[in-house]
Image 1 (spheres, one colour):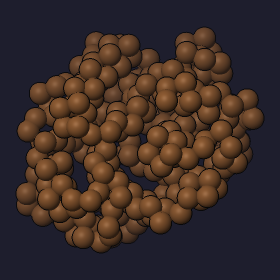
Image 2 (cartoon, rainbow, N blue to C red; image 1 turned 90 degrees about the vertical axis):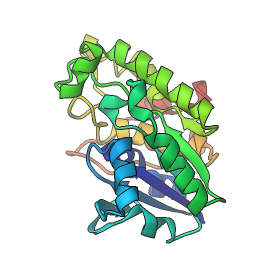
Image 3 (cartoon, rainbow, N blue to C red; image 1 turned 90 degrees about the horizontal axis):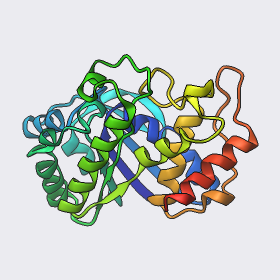
Image 4 (cartoon, rainbow, N blue to C red; image 1 turned 180 degrees about the vertical axis):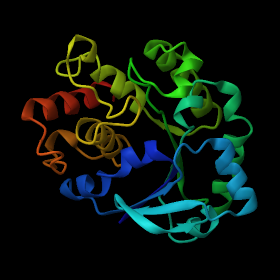
Amino acid sequence: MVNILAIGNSFSQDATTYLHDLAKSGGIDTKVVNLYIGGCSLERHWNNIEHNKADYQYQLNGVEGEHYVTVEEILKEEEWDYIVTQQCSGYSGLMDTYYPYLGNLLAYVQTKCPNAKRVIMQTWAYEVDSTHEHFEFYHNSQEEMYKKLSECYDKVADEYRTDLIPAGDLIQSLRRKEPFLYLEGGKSLCRDGFHMHLLYGRYAVAALWFDHLLGGNIMENPYRPPVQDGKQMTEDEFHIIKNSIKEID
């Protein structure tokens, strides 16, 4: 059993919704918990930890829960193998927003769970026509947002000596390929301009976690996400996503 805890928000929900079932299809038994607060920043995470606030919806193996918990009690729940966090999407390219909160959070996790591997997920840039209010921080430019968030995540991962799950790199790579050439009339990997599409986007990020975090063989994993709105991914779409993951290994 591999125990994975995400201290995150809706972006870690996108990443973890399919992860348990995908890992099972690849022969890896997991417990995947996402501590969810929509749009939660590193500053708010740290404030919640300092005041032991039960503000997090407990999501287990991709299923939303009905009870709310503190970070402290969940850190005690298991011998966690991986603990993953990230900055909220809008602040992801603003370096000052990481300090001192990320360092404090990682140090706290290290104290409570010394055997867990601490990991950061690089978030992704918004869709080119996103209406998210924080897109203005990047002059409503997907490329600018991607460049700045990449710089920030690379810096803090190096500074704190943590592994980095390159979700932003994967999504940006896919956006340059058919059938995800959105500006040319292709499919968007987002469902609303910033959250992942329930099929393509969520599958892509979960598959990346399976490959990078768990060391699974995504090329041979037969998992298919649930049908959404009567639609399922095509074999070509699976092939493109899987190959793109291997390209950024």
